Image 1 (cartoon, rainbow, N blue to C red):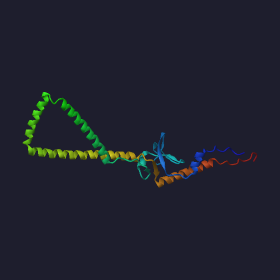
Image 2: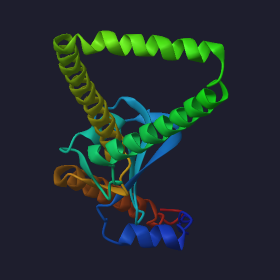
Image 3: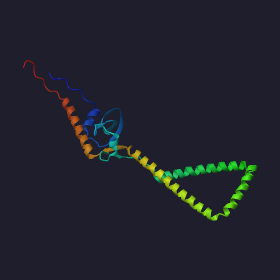
Image 4: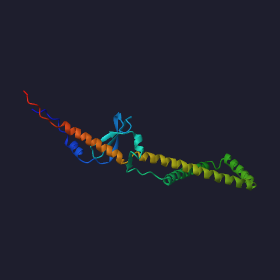
Length: 211
């Protein structure tokens, strides 16, 4: 009498095992750590074939190496010019709001004695500046230089922000394509696993009693 064979796998699992492995993997996060397929370090990052039939643990750092995998369908990142346009629009709106607030405050206090004193002081200041044309010219040049440097610093900040967004986007592709050498190893692993399951399911005849 032959020994009972192992229970058959589900139709979905059997179909996935029979179909050719597709080199399209999505990354997931497991609840428990397991050794990485490459370096054997503990990790919770898992790469699973979109079509089923294969999954394995891999450190997130390997996903940054094009010799391991390459992301496809990476989200679009705004350009420096786009971020600059948004920043300029916000700055313009803030300036308009501040100007409106200042105009409202000036309207309320235009007839106050303090305002008249300020107006007189402003006239005196204008007279003094009119006699310092050379100094005023140098000051204007300094202000222009300041704003030029400020624009360069602001653009550098925007470029750093774009670089950060690009790094994050590269880690969130629609799917990963393994390097051909890595994918070959996964194909070999799947074939080995499939053959082992098939071998475990074979029922060998037992030796008859009495022999």
